[in-house]
Image (tube, rainbow, N blue to C red):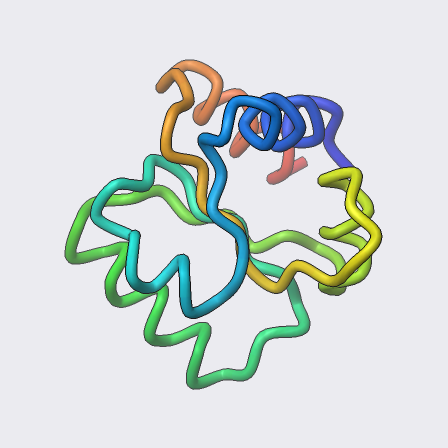
Length: 102
């Protein structure tokens, strides 16, 4: 799991710049800069978010872990299927995507 992604998620949560949950992410995708999706999502939810992301030109990251692992990465005690970061630098997005693709 990427250290950059973990730091970005925790910073965003501390600053209230992170939206958690599939329904909330779908509703707020226009304001997002990066959307993180866990493996635990249903194919329908995944497709809906990915289509919305493409329409609004938002970067998506398919997190290589379950919703439990994504929740732990955020430092939370519950599952997180999807998270969107609303305030993150473009350079950080590129670094996170590059780190996760390795």
